[in-house]
Image 1 (spheres, one colour):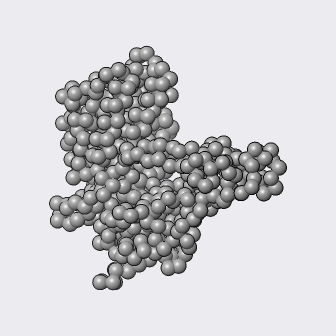
Image 2 (cartoon, rainbow, N blue to C red):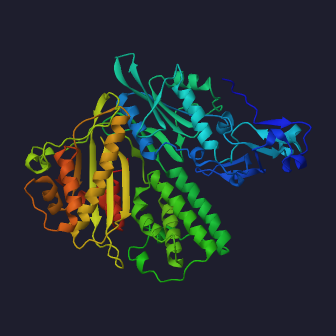
Image 3 (cartoon, rainbow, N blue to C red):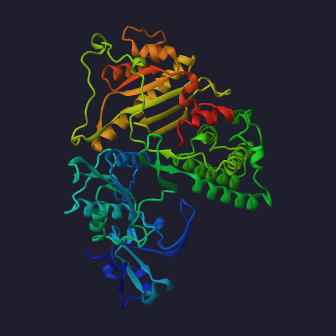
Length: 548
């Protein structure tokens, strides 16, 4: 496959004015667009300019306008798999990704001065120029064809179509595992004992950007590095430090722009993400003007991406303020700026390490021998069809669950907090207001447990479809003794009928040995970090269980 492709075909001898009158036979069925040079700021705050199509003016079929990217938890699993299998990770960035794919729409445009010899001429777009609605889809299909072809022979996984696997074997010890490719548009992570060989094959199809072929140090805005654990083994880790520092600088500039010289509070006055006595639900300050509503949404987006990269110490505060995006107030915006002031004083909470070693578990806390047959029959976990053969060292799931009962003093809705580990690596974190009002702590904790159960089911499916060797149930920790008893002891009876669905779906999952539930002291329940605004001392204590 040729790596050098022309983006448009010039139709010499045709006047653009005639083309607009619909009198050119070759352009029947084609749509005209305008193109522009677009300047953009990327997720890591680097700048980029591109020649882009005005795709917003085209009527593209819905079927060719969707293109997914690898999910963040899949990337975390990929880093975990590298340590688990004892293999390398290589990052590559493919050059001019969309321009490598054929255009899926019928488009023509009048060349501008940026087009050189095509300036002022009628041009038919033959490659997927950036800006078209169909470009993402076209590029993904073109890359998928290359990854499926020989000698690459990778297969897209059903759990995440942007994670590609193939069976492989380490030559030094015949250890069998699955090599992985994690694709985010044109950024590819290769998890393999022979990543350079795979990169060479990809480079035969699409040119790799000079200098991008190396072990990852930045990926999707996160700082990436190998760290040594207390056990003396090397694992991959991610940090949001650089992203946070850049974000704070951007917000400081925005404050000058919006507030005529306003500045973030000093770190000394922002020891916590938001003041401990601030409750956004009772804020009655003035509603924001439309331009500041846009600013509010922008800041929420920046902070939520920081959380995706690992700033879990601000998760609950951002979750609370995210509830007011439809109608934010001045006080809510001020609270967001307070979070950025906190981040300026605390730019680095540490690294999240994707440790493949099994955690120490006191299995006596779990009732794994209970007989559920008389309650739910001979129920078993349903294994996914077309599941690849599990290979490699085993992995297990460990989850922490909590709820802040009636935490919202206006609506009295509770807040759920969950963190799920695979071996010793945090993979999924969750903090969200519950959809219903629960009349008791038991009810709110049961709702959180059901949400955790759903996340566990999804994660178990994903691990299996990635070919990882998942063993045992998900060991789930909860600090509510009533919930633990109800979902661990078959003879335990539910007295609140409106909780029956949550009650039975969790118990049936326990009966199927998908999960088991044990008691965890509130003091050491990590998910408490995601349910309520904590003191600095308590927050730092719980963060110590997550960050390295």
